[in-house]
Image (cartoon, rainbow, N blue to C red; front, side, top):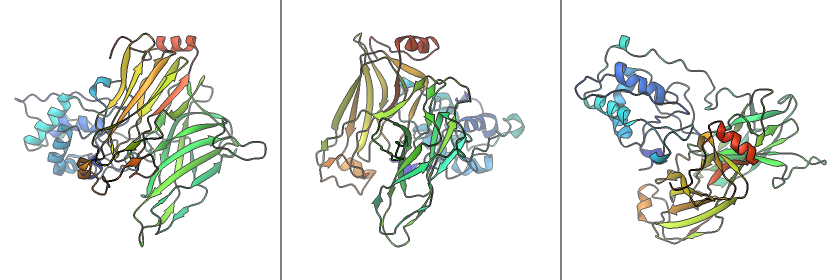
Length: 439
């Protein structure tokens, strides 16, 4: 079932660890003594007044107090037990690998379920944790931004518009950015409900002041779509932003046309920078290695599309971001190493269009020169998809297209090429290396 329709909760957080709580069947499980700590570490980042906005996914209720949680106890238990919440679609074999992992341990799941089954008792507040203090970040997952860049003027999307995808160009002034700074994190803030997605690039004007989005003098500023995490770079990695550059925002507006459906939008992109003076040696590339031409036959429920790329130099991966549309069923990234070994980097067996997670490595992943990364995407254009998306036309062939009712095969990666000595140093510092010899 599609979580954007069925789920009542968003039990997840960015980069927080889980709290182990026993759920002994012979002991009473209460909210304050057993369950509250789990919610504080895994739920309240979103489920609180002014909580985090995960790319337009806003928690519908607060889970700060017993009085707020109690009416939802059964729903919480059901969604936690089914692992629909917290929202995390990768298989368990990469447990602990990604910084933004949103999962509960089996012990925590058992605790919440046992509590709900026993009538959700309150317990003794004096025996539970104190209320958690939350920094006011303005709803940004990256923390309080160093710079927020808005569209220069509000843009009106008319009542008759179904899809529109304009570009907006904002020049960075010295007032905005007095000195060059290395990007550490990027997060978008859509301003209207009909913002479907946003992509961004930093452009360097030529001597005539013109900008070319296809020029080599550009770099990606990532993107935002439903449920997508921000872009985050570890120490030593990033891209340099300076005054005079132009930020291009490509905004896709999508809605049902009709009287009163239009409105204004003034979306923004927020930046956090590495500390002044920090050594940033590695510039980051963010791009897809997907297939641009394919066709899914009418009624086919298991159509496979593949793509691959050979990384000719030692490479460091920072994140993986599967992107498909409504018919997307699964996506897998597999690395084939020069020594003959192979490793599944990421396996998303049940892709959810409403939670387009950007899987951010906790430690940079080093791939030796000559590694081939293969992608397999599976699409469902059959009747089974109508349970989730009844408006789909499964009687037509579907090919690549920008509309959500078309399809994309866009496995994004953030990476940088490094010299062999840098790869060795990164590995020595604790980064994840290849596991040649098998999965």
